[in-house]
Amino acid sequence: MSILIGVYIFVRSSDNFTYLLDFVVLGIFLILVPAGMRDILYRSRIKAIENRLPDFLRDVAEAAKFGTNLADSIKAASEGQYGVLTPEIKKIAAQIRWGVTVDEALSQFVSRNKTPFIEKLISTVIESNISGGNVSEVLSMIAYNSKESQVLEREKYSQMKSYIIIIVLAYAVFILTVLILDLRFFPQMSSYLPSSSSSALSYLNISSIPVIKDILAAVVIIQGIGSGLMSGVLEDGRYQSGLVYAGILTLIGYSAVLFLGGV
Image 1 (cartoon, rainbow, N blue to C red):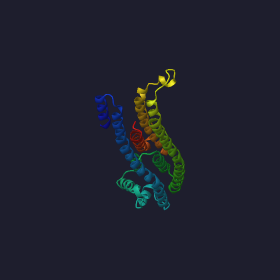
Image 2 (image 1 turned 135 degrees about the horizontal axis):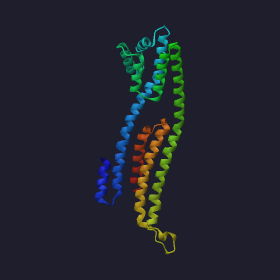
Image 3 (image 1 turned 90 degrees about the horizontal axis):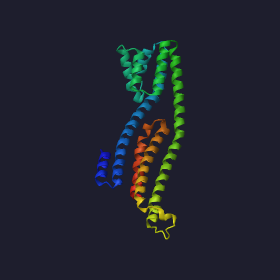
Image 4 (image 1 turned 90 degrees about the vertical axis):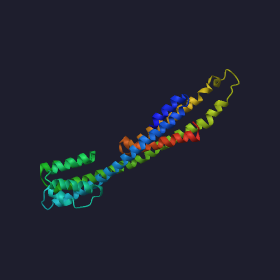
């Protein structure tokens, strides 16, 4: 709605591109930030489930050491506390008590919380249950390996944080360059009166400076969105994680050139 209002005002005024950009930036912020916050809340829940899932499998493996099958081991381990994962575990145990097979209950758990890590982990558990053998030993190995992979994954993405800072600093330098052009370079061009018609500056069209300013303001918006999305990709490999970055960077960048530079 904000973008549509901006387009309407631009069409009615037909000469003020800045009005359109104001509403475009507001619309971009209202679209990206709430969606990004929703994704952050969802990912934080999924991460909490993934972090506690190996602990649950370890407890299931401990229960299976007494000779119980996988179904009874899950029901015994469901009495523990696993944070955000606890309601899901209790749901799996309740389904097993109602007669649902272990494989089906675990498959439904994956469908409710579908991520590559959970899908791979649970599929391994299901395959080990189907193939038979020492369930306790297999589950202990799965829990240990999944913990190790989580540690390596966290180390990998912690190292990428520095690249996110570089992207933000590069965007800040770009905004500073635009401000210098607007505050220093363009005013001198506007006040310049060439003394000779042969001068190179005599061929410059001073009336095009407002158009150049509008283009720079639009580029600031595009750069802010791109930098934010790239930050999300570097953070965890998903552009959705950069929606909040994109919305905030775009709003800050455009506000800077609008109020400090007067673009």
